[in-house]
Image (cartoon, rainbow, N blue to C red; front, side, top):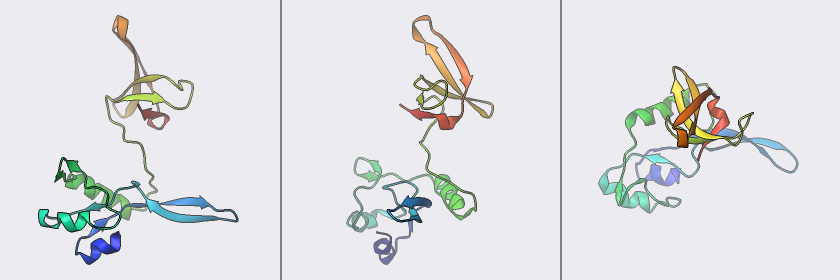
Length: 146
């Protein structure tokens, strides 16, 4: 897909991450897309059809039939991450106010709402009938969106 887009003069951005792959007789480090199933390209409206016809392209992200641009600061952040020496991995997209479930630790299985207080993440556990809640500091890696 990357080669086809390059031939059309459209420069793709495909963030990759290294993974250790286990084969029968050995382990090998391979590169896989950071966001499985997504490749970023910048193109004009007149280039939409050639992009859609590129082998491997299933759909262009957007609303209805209109492509939706990803904000430039987000693309810049990915580019900077890719050229940095820092190790990075995919991570579930979590945001403040999202309903989450604790997936490990002493609160495993508990559902709540993810909040931030200062620089720490907190899980809010609500008792809806009495409209009361408790909050506990939590490692954001120990929760997933529900």
